[in-house]
Amino acid sequence: MLTASEWAKKYPVVSRPWMILGKGPTFRKYKPELASRFNVLALNHVAREVKCDVALMMDLEVFEHCGNQIVDNAKFVFVPWRPHVNFRPGAETIEDFIPRYPGLRQLLDEDRLVVFNAQTNREFPHLASEPVTPIKFFSAEAALNILVASSARNIRTLGLDGGNAYDGNFNDLNNVTLLANGRTNFDAQFRMFNQTLRSYPDLLFGPLNVQTPARIFIGSDPTQVLGAKMFEYSVRRFASMSVTFEIIDNTGLPVPSSPQKRARTGFSFCRFKIPELCNYRGRAIYVDADMQVFADIKDLWTREFDDSWLLYSELKGGTGRSPQYSVMLLDCAKLDWNAKRLIADLDEGKYDYASLMTEFAMMPKEKKRPLLEFEWNSLEHYEEGKTKLIHYTDMPTQPWVSHNNKNGEIWYADVRRALAEGFITRAEIDEHVAMGNVHPQLPEWVGLEPYPDSKRLAQTWVPPYKQFAVKPAARA
View 1 (tube, rainbow, N blue to C red):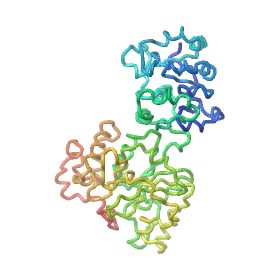
View 2: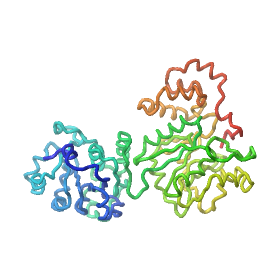
View 3: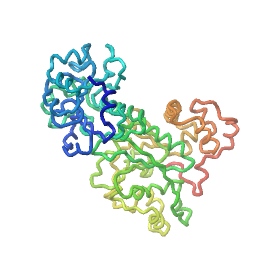
View 4: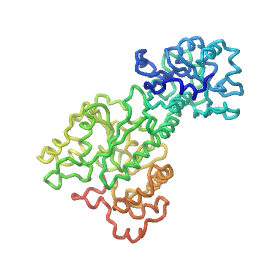
């Protein structure tokens, strides 16, 4: 029989994108004509419903339920070398089961049976010379990892939705297989998708019904580049779909004649460029550079607009802060912004600075809605397990500027992780120290050897935010 590695050498895996189909609610969005665009990998009982290039099943019970349909519908059938029985790997190999299942014998005889080593099997020897396929919670993890190991780099999904429900086509299995492995929901698979994405940075992966990759614009200036890179790192730590990042600033935009109408930072006005940068199509996320993420960005990316054009975060009561358009989900097809025109309108007196920047007065009120929870733009506040994005919005205490931020250690911990993984380097940090972008003692704060003469440099160091032509408010 074929192993997964042997199959990958014989089958044109990279000739087309792949679709992984699961039993979740979005399975209903699958149409047979998609098979003309994608190679289809059907998980478990899904292979009884659709014609597919590959059917993958972890549990032999699947073959008992619908083996004949799988044999008819699938070109190849993937099973672990030691299949699961009663939702657990056992000692018996697929060779032990072939005499008991005529369908398996047929697949073997037709060279359509493919085996792989599943990571879930920790008690018995693996098939020699075949790598172990990572899988911890659900079969979709094995499917994704087999495909990427076979050099597939464009993979979309339907029916891998998280939650705890199947699509109606599989109601007969609700009391048979639904979360029969003891998990309370399917969400854990997203953590494993994240691990695969981090191991294969060139992988394009995400739900077919969602714009992929998620496109994130980071408002920054040269002094905030390290913060922007650390924001990217924090997103990638949790993302279960592909993401792209673009740093944008005020370059190319006019400067208002009145100092009081000028940008408070080197990136204040850049957010208005985004719809045009997206050719007035699709979604986009805008964030400031001084942020850190602790949740899957897909949660933000997939929000419903509910007839709005722009979603921003609600304010937590009692903060005394201005409304925040520093985390936004944009429907670029609905936003006709022209950044140069908006700034000209500001300069001509159509808006004052506050109404443009903290009210977005150029938009109809009903089209901008605070439907994002405070946790997605948590201003100088962190609560473990709840905060999804912290915004270090108070410039004098940003963790790269001051060692006195009450949440600074959270950011420093991410820097240490990024250094350990090679996402950033000591040389990069030193470069930003040399340019004056970060405090001279930042290396020490994150556990590195001190920057040369750092204590003396700290005595005369001027934080970048104090160098703006228009002094920004220290507290937003």
